[in-house]
Image (cartoon, rainbow, N blue to C red; front, top):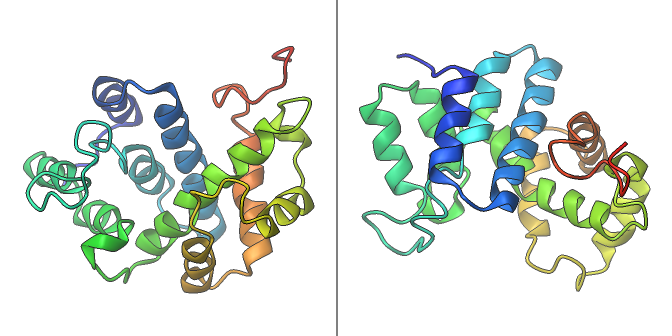
Length: 196
């Protein structure tokens, strides 16, 4: 089955997702997935593109209880129609706990593990005076982690489960994802107030 190119995948993200924040989330997840692909010696293009497109239909079909079209059902159907790799489709299905799809591949486990965490890291960067993700340290994330009212919508239990399924220590996991996101600080709009 054919994997789209990175340019094709990004064009789809731009077509389907209008929210700048959701686009940044897609980029953050892509960066984290590429970092994990390198760590595990996996296919970086497959992993990166899986991360980039994992929420493709979320903006148009956010009602996850809609059993026909709700996220991620519409995108899964499209990915199949487009002949995309089954491993990508399986990982995208597995990242949504309400789908009850077991995460059996390392790709699926990685996607689930990084998805929520990227949101928490972005939130930590945004409350820093510099607004620069490159100033964020693992200990900064750890401090905010303990404050359950901070980024309350982030499911910390899912992040813990994801790291466990992936076989990576939670704080090592945070470090891997944080470093990956620092590498795209500009694209995330988190390169500081001056944009330097």
